[in-house]
Image (cartoon, rainbow, N blue to C red):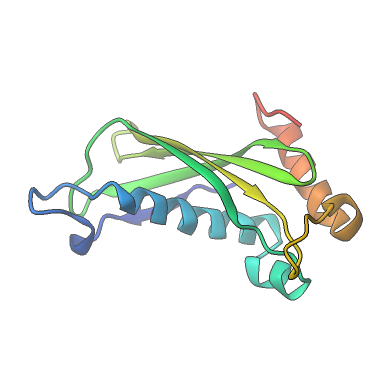
Length: 142
């Protein structure tokens, strides 16, 4: 999968000129949307099929500050997937290849009614795409 790249915007920085910590979570979401598009399952298509994917948990390990104009690359990988819960890992690096933030987000898959969706039954092509991607990644857990 191609990593997601963006530049730090001025409005994302604080009075010290450093990126505010909450923006990394926005970048994770931007990268996750791009990841799903590349996987062939855009969020809009999933929602049209009646499947929603709220965030269950998020964890960020901030390692290096970012400032206005710095290019950030966000590599997304599937850390684990069991057909109901998916954990994504994010490695955010600057142009020098230094990790600025290592993060994870855990997602569940729910119906419009808020019930868990068993993706192997409801969206088997999605499961196949995720599992194929995981087979190609080192260190992924099924």
